[in-house]
Length: 296
Ligand SMILES: [Zn+2]
Image 1 (tube, rainbow, N blue to C red):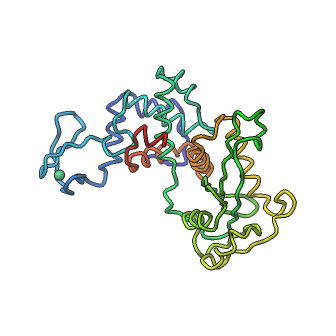
Image 2: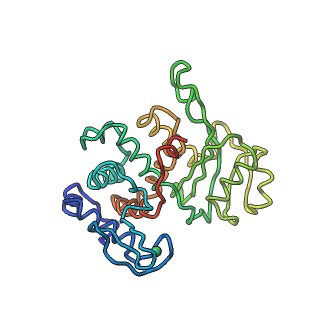
Image 3: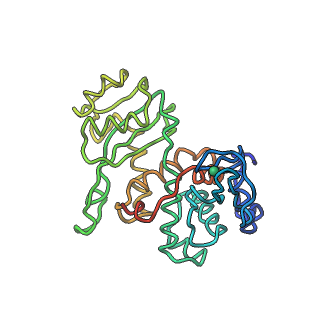
């Protein structure tokens, strides 16, 4: 595989993936590069299936395709167009709307929207790389009048808790989660998923954080100051997210997916367009989702 820090231009992309076969070959490599394992019986020997890239388990005879068991499962259009969508979503600095994808690829807007939601599932944090050192945590309201939307049309507000990793004067990573209440239970569950117990965490004086000092031994509660003056990096990061959300998505219905998308791109901004390969890899590792699961 090529250098992850090298940017992938549209020309290079087209050179790498001129046709469907190239896409299937790449998926095959991502999925079975370290060897074949039958998803039914765990057997590691296979023979070729009827279709070119399918593999048949020699023990239970299950036929497995490079896309089965991945987010590319049951694709309703060509794998090449699916790769184009992953390319555009991962290389556009601010992401791309389903309407624009529809125009570029000659697919229906709804089709693009649905597949893009799947791509966004691949952008969900694995939870494998928790913040170890300096962190800040705070909640904010997203949507509704807070965002300056006129009238009550878009009035559904949602509560989101964000955590950032501080590095020098900047923010090296951020994570966010939609929550129902600022309760210790919900705040604690989120913090456990993104922060090491030993991390040096700063929160405001909200009482919901108080019981968490038992688990997070280096959690310090400080006065947030006027308009969060004592948390400048965190609030700048949150403003960045809100600005992006306003420009890109005009509703907060699928807010968690948008948070995942934004944080994924933010956390990999140092990787440049190398995130294309990373995203494909994650899409192959992530089990398929149905339309029902997407809109749930
Ligand atoms: Zn088998």
